Image (cartoon, rainbow, N blue to C red; front, side, top):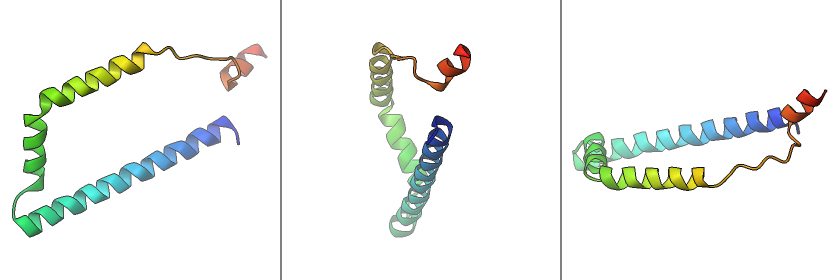
Length: 85
């Protein structure tokens, strides 16, 4: 399998996973509104607003940890083969 097809396959899987997550979110929101009679979107907005400092600190910490590790290239990718000739 070439790297282009591997990347395309990975992107398809990620899109499928994201769409399943959105479908389940919509189902949960409908279930909350039908069973409890409250808006699930407003509940989600309240939680995100009240926990915004914690969320921002987690995203910042994750970003700093990811950027702290160097990305190593061993020279065996398709870009290096295209440049060499």
